[in-house]
Image (cartoon, rainbow, N blue to C red):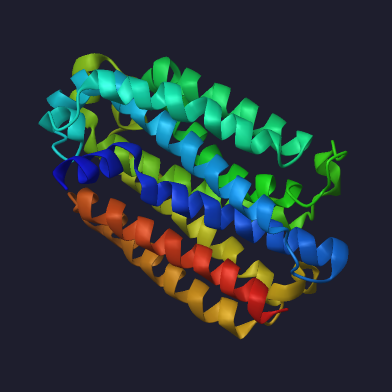
Length: 300
């Protein structure tokens, strides 16, 4: 049981589930746009689920493999490699197994999805090996990872011959932007948490350049921008199923309230509990995903 828990923590499988929900939301919106129904092929749902799960799990395993030294400095006992529950070699083997499997799954959806998955996967490996040392860039890579599943989901219903992102519903790009802003905010908060280890390792991050307090303020600003954009689907008719959708509005209001509470703490408190707010905002983002998912069905 301990080993299974450690493997889950290494691969952050809850993130894979959230990525799949984002893909499913993108698929639902595109399906309604193109065919005015929610009849998604079961095989595509299964393939996109495993694409998200395998690629997310493999790159997180590789991430912890390369981060082992800095995680020890930062006393990241939440990481199984730091605790010694899993060996670094095992993490590497999991990457070698799951990474190609994720790409294979995307290939059988359609060519557009395969290319999105391939480009994202290659960038993910580069991030784990090199880009993360420049956190000014890495923060926005993580935000991209939170945003791209919506576009990937939109591409799943384009058909086997589809090879253009231009036919994807523009609404998905706005939703992806909301996810991008919230993701960037969480990553900047993490930089403040990891300031000590990053300083020792010479990692370039926002707190090292503008200070911890200003970085928290930047994270709060990004959350506030995400909150503002989240109201657009409810008030603008161009957003189709989400226009005046009460189910969406209630759930997204919960997310916005949680993000607003975190933003106020980041701005008003000199030393907010960042570990708590990292988990708190993850729950908020998950509820936001449910808002888009439930809204797509309720608006059907």
